[in-house]
Amino acid sequence: MISNIAYPLTYHTYDVLIIGAGGAGLRAAIEAARGGASVGVVSKVPPTRSHTVAAQGGINAALGNVTEDDWRWHAYDTIRGSDWLGDQDAIRYMCKHAPEAIRDLEQMGVPFTRDDQGNIYQRPYGGMSTHYGKGDVAFRACAAADRTGDAMMTGLYDYVKRYPVTFYNEFIVLDLLMRENNQCLGCIAWELDSGALHVFLSLHTIIATGGYGQIFASATSSSTCTGDGNAFALRAGLYVQDMEFVQFHPTGLYGSGVLISEAARAEGGILRNKLGERFMERYAPNYLDLASRDVVTRAMIQEIREGRGCGAEGAYIELDLRAIPAERFATYLPGTQSLAKELLGCDVTRDPLPVIPTAHYTMGGIPADLDGKVLGAQGLYCIGEAACASVHGANRLGCNSLLDLVVFGKRTGAYAAQHGKRASLKHSDLPSYAVEKILARLDGWRYAHGSIDPDWFRTRTQHLTQSYAGIIRDGMSLNEGITTLEDVRTHMHDACGLHHSTMLWNNGLVTALETENLMMQSLATLHAARFRTESRGAHARSDYPARNDDQWLVHTLIACSEEWDFACSTLAVRMDASEGEAPLMPEARHY
Ligand SMILES: Cc1cc2nc3c(=O)[nH]c(=O)nc-3n(C[C@H](O)[C@H](O)[C@H](O)COP(=O)(O)OP(=O)(O)OC[C@H]3O[C@@H](n4cnc5c(N)ncnc54)[C@H](O)[C@@H]3O)c2cc1C
Image (cartoon, rainbow, N blue to C red; front, side):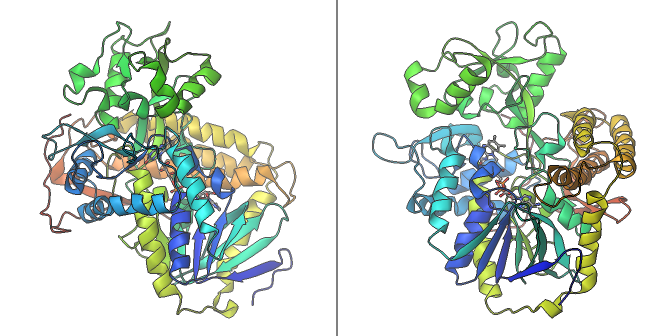
């Protein structure tokens, strides 16, 4: 056993260890426990404070409750939405298993909104069609009003309590414990309330730490979405994939960035420029305001750039909800109505809302296969927004993330339990270097004695990423962004300091650790964006405006050395026949 005088370590051993208690982590925990494994879940916030709780619009499944539907049409829409960068086997698996995933949630007690016949209410969502894009819009998003994530998390968290799953809440995982052969043996976490450090040993560790939307100054994601899991993988010498693809949601509230759900447009909301025009008629004549998010976002930016933005400075677009009958808000959009009232003092039945595209979802993440197994590692899995499976490719369709969480959470939880029950791990299996490296990083920030607060570096990173890796990019500004962010990183190492070195609820220390993780994701995003010299999905380059399938129908892999040198390479997109369906070859995307 390793003894460390400065940090007495408390040991725990589980068949399956899950880092993160959002939708993905909870779904995996339920399935792993059902499979008979002992399960520990470590989370930096209580489960129901994870970002999943903020999800609003819904979760897709071809149930056909409103319009006719078929999982194959759902898969087609998802592949097209991904701009053909999604792995087709993973997408088909997800769409085929979506109806079963919804039934599971229903049985676990998730209170979906119902129609008059008692069926689950489904609404249309961006990029969703019938008959392989040739038929009408599909009503595929199963919703609990516009608070679907809250309903889902409450249901999952209530349900998981039936099983002997142990939760360690308000524990910050510092890093993975890795052996030299890339085998993961668990992680080390810092308990905020006692200040103690804990070693979690497991031969099957699942990363479910969510996205890294906080690299942007204006983002809909919670402040906890700092890409910690991605940073664990990079520091372990593993890869992250497709980091250049960040989704900007068309309707963040101008000023605060708070999300107005796509459900508002699904229920009849219309985007208008300062002339009052429904400008989406020009950009997506068939799908209009419900084209996929990358298409709508770019159209809004073009309207603003061409001088048709609203407000004194022409800086935003208006979301007009006045065509929606007032009585529908209470049942289908109560959250949107109350957000507008509370934040802007607006009555959505009378006043249009000022909106602007805001960073929303990170398609990039840790490359994982359908069982969640992480590329290049043993005993390590990844699910949810932290993973790149890749079901969203270059652009995620709305309401496909909650689905991704529960479909792959279930499969990975079951797989890890099946393989984990037989495994046993002793403290002596843990090499001391694995622990020492983690403690050295912790001490580096804990005793940093510069004069600048870590928060300053976090904000600076966010503003720089926003200006250099925003909706439209180009090589020159990406180069400049990389150099500038490198300087900020060096400056942080030289000049950052904490007010005190206590281990009890030391927010400064949490911020320093998270900011380093954020910076890594930010630099990985800029490097990947510079590497990909084409435009595809959410990655739009003004110097390479066209999609280039000959050269770039591949995933981007990023590795990071201990000195923070980033290396880019590529990985083939999986386009073989799967689930009895032939491969779908790239076409032009029209909405
Ligand atoms: C405002 C908003 C609305 C959305 N609406 C929809 C929608 O309607 N439909 C849809 O499909 N998608 C939606 N999305 C996307 C979707 O909600 C997310 O992609 C998804 O919830 C991510 O789930 P997750 O389980 O991967 O991560 P999260 O829910 O973010 O959970 C991450 C977990 O990891 C833990 N964690 C992270 N780092 C550490 C660490 N260092 N140590 C310990 N624990 C750690 C956290 O405590 C947390 O428990 C929305 C997203 C946002 C931001």
